[in-house]
Length: 280
Ligand code: AHM
Ligand code: MG
Image 1 (spheres, protein in one colour):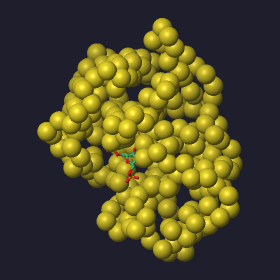
Image 2: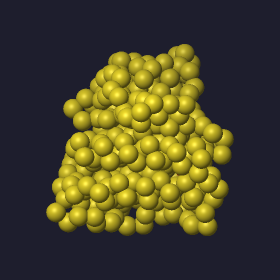
Image 3: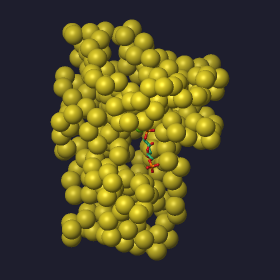
């Protein structure tokens, strides 16, 4: 696992440099999800692929930016699902973006995740590693990630990050979100899953939701590279992660680009979602 964390650290330093000084324009490629890729999406994907190719324990990689899984070393133990540059539509407005990694042992399903790691490229570059617990690291002047602290969610938070187009929300989702605001929660939503969830984790709790909508009945966020790794992080930090009714880490993906509605948060907010969604 150390080899993987070191490879991600090296990739993060290179991607941070690309974000700061690289070409931020669009390419002429469209990825599997139908998004036109930025040159930075492609560059970040290649950097990560290069770094994983250097370590023999990685059997295969599954990237949001690639159509199919790619085998790197058939004797390797781990399969890594990753989103190389999540939130890249925020690059032009200079908001924080991130990279997300799920480390699967032997096979790719929620039950075989052994670690989840994400990197936030903001005013500072930070890496969060979830294994038995969840730890925050920060990039220092020498280009090394130094441990800062363990992240633990409170039972209840104050933030409400509400994803997806509101006109596509169900009536009961709308009511749930309005009730949460009526109880004094504050809206925090940048449109970057990594910084939005990082904020909830570091401020002690709250709720992030990306529900089913009329135009995206299976939600938007992808199971293998976005939903499963963050579900793992939230559970290890003492919170919870559900699709509305079930634990996200019990879902099965039948295709590598499958999506799911998702809710991540501290326990009280997730119970609130479960109670409301159970009625429908
Ligand atoms: P991306 O992987 O194409 O960048 O899309 C994922 C992003 C997430 O970071 C974020 O939570 C979500 O899309 C925002 O979507 P919306 O603008 O529909 O709320
Ligand atoms: Mg993404």
